[in-house]
Length: 380
Image 1 (spheres, rainbow, N blue to C red):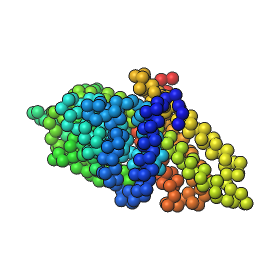
Image 2 (tube, rainbow, N blue to C red; image 1 turned 180 degrees about the vertical axis):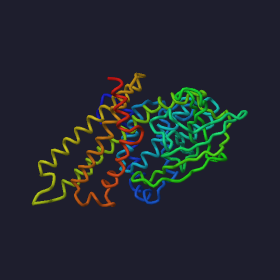
Image 3 (cartoon, rainbow, N blue to C red; image 1 turned 135 degrees about the vertical axis):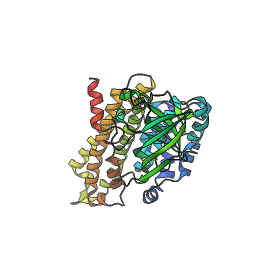
């Protein structure tokens, strides 16, 4: 793939990820969808190939790349056609573990980060609550100081990797009297801490091979050594990492849309109707051509936003644009792709049907499209 944003190293990385997806994910994804879980050996394999710590320091096993590498990973995972696999991986690499890498102290980094990078442990991020999504300042989960510990009570909702995660980075309100955005702290929670439990695994429309959970905290005693970053500054850490989260989700959606077009082209070039292939129908080939143009526009926006981030520039507006545009675009394009597949596109045995269900989460998760548009509006 030619682009001003890609070095030879990034092109080699893309090829390596694509080979991994084609050999280690696609042949097994249907079984994972049925079982509702992804074997841990795939996580460890990704770790051994260097996919899980691309932006982290070499001393912990990382490659010290930047946001463009994250976008490459997300786009190629999106092409797998299994949104749940993409979600499990990207939560681990770009939504949860960055909190540790950015704000962890030396002891915390040494304890957790090498194992995260190797894929020996799976991570998750606990921010969303039953009544709190993008409105992070409305958080109700409490952490009350008790000697040298904090006692956490509350619940988290819609937590990807919540059932299977070994370590979670969880936000809780530590100062109820402070302005809502100034009294939140991040904590490191090990899954075996007494009082922590998975309330239930959620039965979703899509992303079936990725677990999503309700998490309960019932007098979970957390030592002060597990505070991640500064006390009462967790809100700002969360808002900062939202950009990373939204960038990779935009890239993932764009990769899904590109793959959907490829699958549909393969179908319409062989499926015959009224004495000719569907691709011979002007209306179909022109709509697919326009879809390809939209994907390319989305790709340029995603990688420009990633490049800005890599340069240390303020990219909130561009990331929000990429997330909003690609989230809506993937649903529009896959809708047409299902239509062009006809009855075959409505069968559970077809990849395009699964992709149709998986894609619907993009305008919701990681910040709804409406939230993204407000972020853009503030900066116009």
